[in-house]
Image (cartoon, rainbow, N blue to C red; front, side):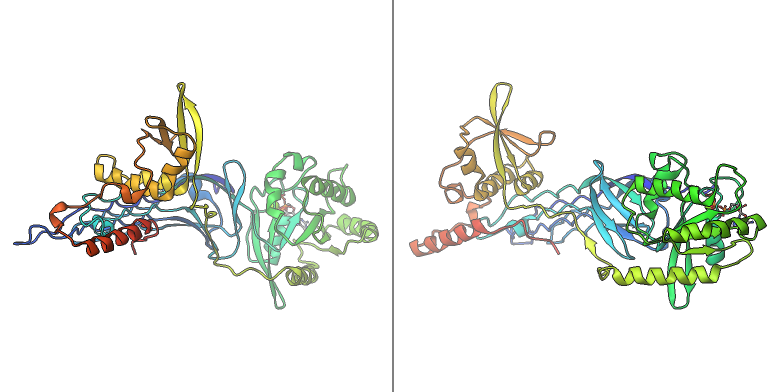
Length: 481
Ligand SMILES: Nc1nc2c(ncn2[C@@H]2O[C@H](COP(=O)(O)OP(=O)(O)OP(=O)(O)O)[C@@H](O)[C@H]2O)c(=O)[nH]1
Ligand SMILES: [Mg+2]
């Protein structure tokens, strides 16, 4: 049995950044070579990409956990770690990406359109990249940042030009089968079609797609039958076709009341009022059907519908129908604003990463100051807390960003708790303010005094200026390759 899946929950994990390496160049007779630890590689992204050969989300239903590969750690000898590989997940045209709360993150239409669902973590800088005039031989490297973890929902909304709607067994699938090369299942019991079928029709120079949806019954918009679940597949269609059965044996039904009921369901579902509609009276090969069609035609026309009498089985009226649809499709395409270029890559909204906030809370009766911000939180993740020098470097960075000053302004005092990060994932420490004056006054970190030679005053001044420039340099924007 084939299963059609048009909604799945997907858990994606981008690759972690590789750790930077702390290493010192060794060579015979040169006991103190410079730092030569390479940078860690970037973790791979998880990217959703529209692939027109993919038609269902079934694969993701079966394996909903997907992970891109990690970046490799850097190595000595200035060797950078390899980047992780992006994981490209093919999805059907018309896939909508939502978060778990139901907010639309991306609407993927058009072959090649992509969405970065989870971003790989940055690789950590090695000690070679961290070395500077001021920090000649750093004895530490930065850790790689863990990759994003995201829980997303994928929903498929079929992209077709024309949607066939109607009661079960009205002959929707039969019509698709004779107008296109598609071979959907056809049978004389209701709800033969459990999933939308898609067919490609060529009429003159116009090529368009036609989709049917499972039969609609009264109450469909409230979820009766298979209705509601599949109405979303008609949302994107530009033309609606009412397929009406002229040969039904059910005594309480006739084409006009069928039409009224389907229209009521569409109205209830909403959002489809502006679509042009035409009416197809099907099964006119049946003698009673032909009579009934002729009887109701004036009524339907009086309501403003163009009416086509056809027989899917006897192949009557199909050519005229397919050309009329081609015309409507062409009009709809012409009226639509120019298609945006396909192959767009949508990235999650860029966070404003320059700022941070400090808020005061209370934890067990003691004041706790919470720092939130993209940079400080990332810096914390990049820090190897078992290495004092690395911790000192973190303090320098936080200081440079103004975190220390902000904490002081917020009223933090020595010994108060400071948490960097969200409640469920923060690094907490007791605050020990360094000196007011900022980075320059801090002890020189990463300096090996064996490198130091006595310096004349002018040299010392130059060095001090260089240090100040150094302290303003942003390492964060360094992307290893
Ligand atoms: N005599 C006659 N029978 C038809 C015609 N079109 C479809 N049928 C028959 O009607 C029955 C239902 O046809 P389907 O194409 O499966 O109908 P459907 O609208 O797709 O039905 P669901 O998928 O259940 O909603 C089948 O037995 C078809 O052979 C027609 O033009 N003439
Ligand atoms: Mg069908």
